[in-house]
Image (tube, rainbow, N blue to C red; front, top):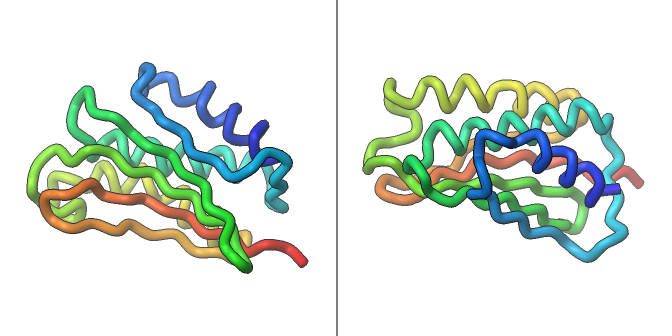
Length: 130
């Protein structure tokens, strides 16, 4: 179940030290994906945002149910007005790489959305199984 999976991710994200806010759909939601691989992918999203976010800032973890997919997003407060793709943020991109690998293996996609001066959003989208 989605709530169990997210609970495991939150429990493993100790480096965020109480700075994590989680927004989920209604209880009872199910995600058809390898739970351990998806947990590692979501931790990867959290690490990417934590590298990029402002020290001590909040990190938000959101899960959306789309018509044909699940979308997982992580956003943190920006550290500076530089692009997440600047050389200083190579570490954020490296932390994000496992999420992209898992998403593609599950038939989904992953990416980073960023606008200068705003928080970067690291996202992963998995198709719903019919």
